[in-house]
Length: 433
Image (cartoon, rainbow, N blue to C red; front, side, top):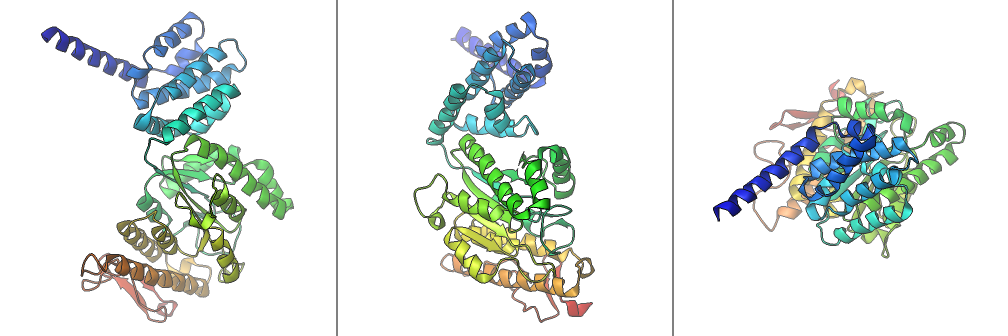
């Protein structure tokens, strides 16, 4: 008994040591040495995959992917591909979800899409890996993946089309909604691959998202939007659908929320996104949701998408919104956001908007229009929160605006201000200037 216990402890110690070595060792450099040392390393690894944690396995996947792509058609590539496939196919259950998440944190040319669709060149081997993902998906819970465009959706900058809806910077309420949703975040961007490094720096430094998958567009589509806007926007939508089809194969267990804008092909993508891989009506799906942040006309006031078109898109399962408080309400109504998440997201949208000075907008009229849209959506949020909590408690369930009321804001836009005394947030009227 004592001997058995000692042996078990030694085995656990050995596994922990191997795991730590894989986390610390320069695997890509070791594989790059070639010759007997690399072959010996790979032979040793093949028999100890089950002793490695998902984190350590992800480092091996990254090193193998980099080595395979760098070697090209070298004779040893086939053996490297086989080991890469073995790592992915020998990982199951929640460990597989964790492994895929770690791989996706690898950054440009090191994410899961790169490993499966670039590093694994053999089609039969790739299909076997994807079949393994599909089989495991049936045994797993459905984690949420948030797919988002960048420009004019969560960020106002030099890219994207549409009038001056907000000042440059993060779109108010976008990050509170992402935080309330939780889950994995991937950006389906129209930006070409050569701007990926710049895009990641912007996401980290300006938006505050350090770890996210970036699925880039193509330079050809960007150029087309300059000389042939109609063709360019369609090409952007088609590219996003192509990239998403691969992403969905990598994560068949997932539920997806897509958030785009009405400026550059995202509506075409959203309509296709809601219908692909489905036999039912798009508007009735519960494993996906598609939302479109409406950009504005050149005056900064008039919305790009008229009411009739919004109603038409809704029938296709695509919901157009003006504020991220409104987006949060749509997601709550479709079961992607619980009551607390709705309250937190709406409160965050209110606070974000309150941080922007009226003078930062291009005109008082633009500011007042945004303010009116936000107050309208906050009233709708409050109604939903009260309704959701009506049967469970006598306590009001909105986001607090004063000690005696727990709603976000029900102050009409014509009044001087809507104040959240609990947080110090106010939405001033243009009459206050």
